[in-house]
Length: 636
Image (cartoon, rainbow, N blue to C red; front, side, top):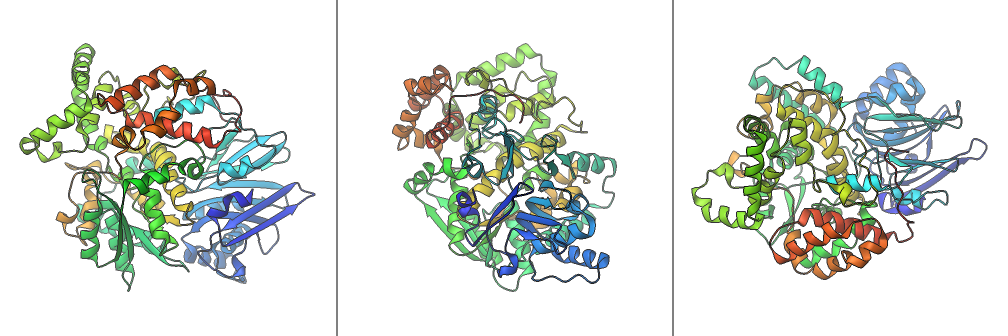
C-alpha cells in the first residue's frame, strides 16, 4: 500500500505493526522539515502511548513548542520535526484537545496504544486528503484510493449515485467517493475507531459554519484603514509561518490578486528574491503569463515562466486518471500539473493563492449573483422561461462572436471570457425559486445527471441540505457554499494531486483559519464593492501598482473545447462510442452522443459536460478490473 504512494513521499518509507493489537501503519515521507532520521515515520511519542503517521505541515511550531514547554518544562526533543512536537502535544493534552491547537494542513492517523483506539484527523479546509473504508472486518485508510485498492480486502464496486454527483459538480463531494463503502473524511473532523466500534461518525473540531455565524454576530467595528492593517498583518504572519522549510521554497504566480498578494508578502519576509513560476499558453484568451511577468518584475522575484504547446498539454491528459485516482474533471487540472512540474525542477515547496475567491468574494457569481437574483425575483416565472428560451436560440459561440463585434461599445465589466457560456448559464438559472436553488444550478454541469447515469439516485450533499445556515445577503450565502463545497472538493483536490504527483508540497496561506475567521467578521462592503476582493486589493496596492493586477477575472484554463474538435477528437470518439457506453453499463449513451455531435459540429460548446464524461471514461479504462456498477446513496 505504501509503495503505491511513492510520489507523495520519495525520500523515506517506514512501516510499523502491532500484530497483537491488529494495527499496521505505513508512511511515505516527503522530507520538508528535519531531513535527518529524527523525522522518520511512523513515529512514537516519548511516552510510547501514541504512534502516528502524519501527512502535511504544522505551521505554528514555535507557538506550540512554547505551550508544550509551559505544560511540561522538562520536555526534550530528538530533532525539530513537527511530527515529534505534535506527539509531545498528545502526551501533554491528549489527541482530541491537541488537534484544535494545530495551525496547519494535515491528514493524521494516531494509534493510542493504551486504549487500543485509532484517531483519524483532517485539517480545517481539507487541504490534505484522507480516505477510509471497512470491508470484511478490515478497517483501512490512506491518502489516496490507489493505496486502498492495492489491499486484497478492498471492495471496488462503483457507487453510481456518487457518479451522478460527479457529473453535476465535476468532482465527487465529500464524504462520498467513486467506490461504495469508501468515504472521504470531512474537513475539520476527527474519526475515532476501535476494534469494538468501526462505525462511528466523524466529529467536528472546527466548522466554517460556526465561524461564519460567529463573524456575523460579532462583526468587525474598526475603520476601513484598521481592517486593511489587520488583514495585512494576519496575511503577513500566515505567509511567514508557511515559509519555514529545510528545502528550497517558492510560489505559483498567475499575476492575479491572490497569488500576487502571497508573493508580495513572501518578498517582504525574505532577504533573497522569491522563486516564482508561471505557465503560459499561446492563446490570448487563456494566457496569464504576461501579467505574472509584470508583477514578478515589479516585485523583483526570481521568475521562471514556460510556454506550453498544445502537444505538451495533451500528453498530460492520459496521465490524469492515475494522478487524480477517481473521476475529476476540472480542466484546469492540466495547467496546475504543468506549473507544479515546472516548479519541482527548482523547489520542493510552493505557496499558492488558493482560497482568496471563496473568503473575499472573488468569483463573478458573488458580484453578479445578488443583482441577478433581485431582478429574477421581480419577474414572473413564465416571462423568465421565455427569456431563457430566447437566449438559448443562439449558440454560445454565436453569442461570443456577437460580443466580440460589439466589444468597443461595451462597458468594461461586460468584457468577459466566454460570454456565450455565461449567458447560457444565466438561462439555466432563470426558473430558480430561491438564491440557494440559483447557486445549485450555477454549481451544476449536467442538470439532470440521474438521466445520464444508469440506476443512480443523487444523494444529499451540503448544497441540498435543508438545515444550511441563512445569511444576510445572497453573496455571503454563495461565498459560504463555495467554501464548504467547491473549495475542498475541487480546488484543493486539484492542487494536492497535481503537486504531489511530482512530489511538490503546496501550501495555502489564505486558508490560515485566522484569516478565514477575520474575513467572516468583515462587513460585506469590505469584501465586495463594485467588484470582489475589495479589501484584498487594498492590501495588495501597498506592494503592487493597481494597474498590474486590476483586470477582469480570467481563471486558469485551457482551450478544451477546440481541442475536442481537433487533436483530441479521435481519443474522445473512442471513449464516447455508443457501443462502448452500452457495453460498460454505467452511462446512457443518447444524451452524451447528442452533445458530442452538437459540439464537434460547432453548433454548441459542451466542453464542460463532455470533459466530465471523458474523464470518467478515461478513469474507467485505467481501472478495467472494476466490476459492474453498484448503487449506494449514503456513505459507508
